[in-house]
Structures are given as C-alpha cells and as structure tokens.
Image (cartoon, rainbow, N blue to C red; front, side, top):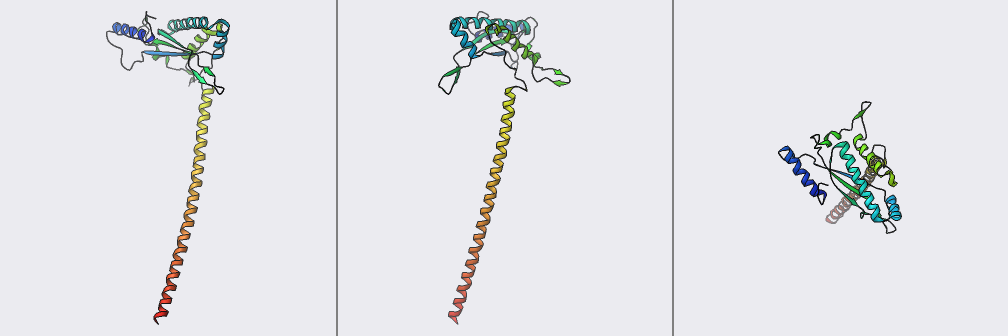
Length: 231
C-alpha cells in the first residue's frame, strides 16, 4: 500500500499526508493506528495447503485479506497500510507437535481523507436496545461479518463474537468463582491455623502456670526445711 515496502513505511507516508492536509501534526492523544487481527482456523488452512500447496494457499489468502482491507476502507473509511500474515507462530502440544496460530495483522490509518474525520471514535459507541447498552459493538461485529464473507468460499467459518454469553466470559466467570472459592478456602485454613495457635497458647499458658505452682511449692518446702534446721 502507498508504494511502501512495509506497514510502518506506509504509516509514515500517510501520517505525513495527514499532517500536510491539516497544516499540523495529529494530536499526540489521537489513535492514528487501527489494527485488525484476522484469525483463521489452522485445521482448515492446513487442509487447503495439503490440497493446493503452501504457496498457492498463501497467495489466495493474501488476496482475500487485501479484499477485506478494501471492504473496510469502503464501508468505514479507514486507510489501509499493510498486511502481515503469520504462519510460523503456535503452541506446543502434549505430543510435541506445534499447533500453528494462523492469523494476519491488517493495519489501517485512522483517518478518512474523503470525509475529513477519524472514523474510530464514532465506532466505539456500542449503542442501546430497549434502553440497555448492547453487550457487543455492532460496528466490530460488522467487521467480523466482512471477514467471514471474504473467507467463506475457502471453507472458513465465522468465529463467535466476544460477547457476554460466550466462552471467554464463561472462563472469566469461572476464574472469578475459582478465585472466590480459593479465597474462602484460604480463610478457612487461616482460621484453622489461628484456632490451633490459640489452643497451643492455652497449653503453654497452662504449662507455665503449673511450672510456677511447682516452683512456688518447691520454694515453700525449702523455706520450711530451712526454718526447721534453724530451730
């Protein structure tokens, strides 16, 4: 994009264009960079590689990503900067194999040169339905829909939106519940330890009292014996 060799170089060019248009640099607190992460199923990607070859699949996927970037620009106004497709990152499995995390970073500049505005700020509002704020941002849902439309013909299916009822929130709720249960268990353990310490303290106090009584008795007996000898 913009005859640049990298997304960073494209960013610098568009930033300078923006500054020249405005007659000054963008404000320091402006989010000039808008990054999308498009995640693709590793299983489906591997199946395509096996059937068509790695080079051809990568070429087709990059073409789809470019089309996606154009769609986003057309509908929302963001200026495309570049695309980085990552095929070499992943996590090690129990059997020693590596499960790839197939994804792409699609970079945009947060400025619409046709409408002379930064689109991102207006997209951050979730909106309301029946007087309640929506769990999901419909603008970002729309972006996910666009990605799904571009990759559907390759056999990829749309992922689940990150809403309040999905697995991510379930994991968060489970994490909170586990943390609460752990805290309660720690409180019980600490209470038990405190009870043990109190019981031990009582035993020590009783022993001290017995020792004092014994010493007092021994002292009294010694005094009585001494008095007998002096008589």
